[in-house]
Amino acid sequence: MQELRNEYTGVEGERAGTTERAWDSTERRAEEAASEAGRRARRIKDEASQTLRTAKEKAGVAYDRTADQAVRAYHSAREYAVTNPGVAAAVTFAAGVGVGVMMTGRNGSRAYRQGLVPLVAVALAQAVLDVFDEAR
Image 1: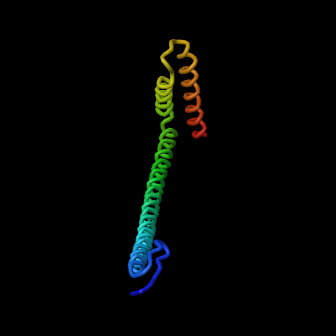
Image 2 (image 1 turned 45 degrees about the vertical axis):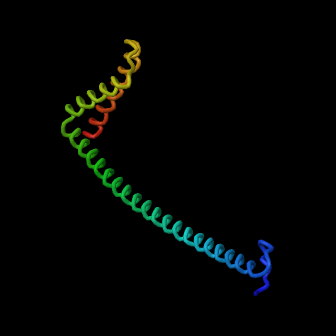
Image 3 (image 1 turned 60 degrees about the vertical axis):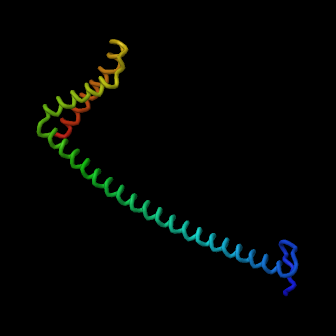
């Protein structure tokens, strides 16, 4: 029989060797579990990074496509305004009235005069200025 003294439990003799082997086995299992947890964490991190990269790429493509469409729509609207200034002024006026009505509270005529009229006048003046500046 082996005379060993277990440093953790203080047990001597054959039982000390068994206890020591149990500690070693437990320690090995804990190290293996920690190693496995590290591998899983790295794999999850890598998957999350890949998902984030993919999402960024898709968002960039969608942004570029939307920006291109917005630029084309803007140029088309400007071209239409130059060729049809009367219609453009009327549409702009109507849009200004609509936005003014939405922004103006329902607090009576004073709020109407202070909010809607100046807003419509500025919108109409800007639209007419834009149309006639392009025509020159």
